[in-house]
Length: 144
Image: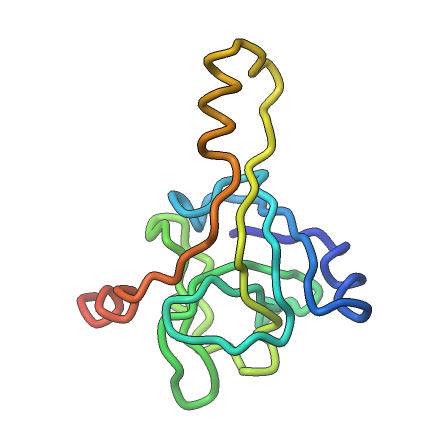
């Protein structure tokens, strides 16, 4: 499950935006291990948004998931990689107060060994992208 660095939490008190690093495969293909996210804390969350939240059973662990729908008691969240687990199918609805913010932008750092001009050009074309909401997320939930 994607975990975020604790720098995210410290920066939250000062500015409404912060940077977080993703670890784990649960948001592939949207986000990959090592991706950096620009997160807006306290942003209005809508179904389909990629959100940063506290894990319901381990509040010191920050995770990133897709908010699928608001239910009684909070948000139903899912990872984009259905085989990775670690989402509401495991721990249920996430209380509203555990949802900290919304991811707006993804930056993929240059990998070690990516030095050839072709590799650098490919990286430059795909490294920085906005994180778009997936409005089909609620339809995927109903299909399960």
